[in-house]
Length: 141
Image (cartoon, rainbow, N blue to C red; front, side, top):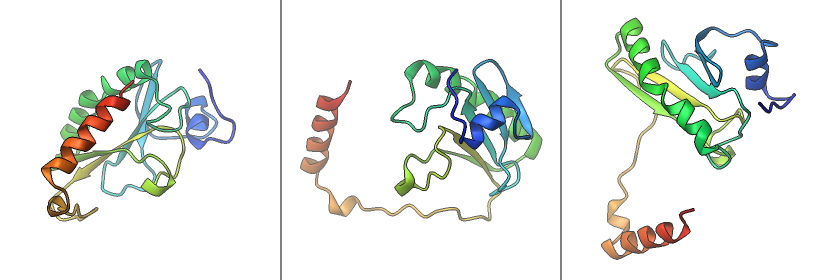
């Protein structure tokens, strides 16, 4: 597994920095986020250093995402929240602050507003969306 010496999450994986782990296997680790945006806020990371979704290998993604339901159910049983956001930020412009791929599990208890999604549908025609879809399909690897 590759690691970067300056990566805080790689240091958590190696045990160099302590964390409150809730799950670990050979490929991934989940631990409570220090910021606790809401009670139970958890991060799930691959042990192998991959900076973001654009570097994330499909095999790594498979190992990571197969653990998502298990972790979500354990958090729900523990914290009895009303909803759950699973978020992933990629790149500085998307508010990624640690450049080691990670998923946020953010329990929602019904009162907190974390972000507001705007409806911009009036700015895009059906033709725009069809054109975007065709271009993305052409760029699929």
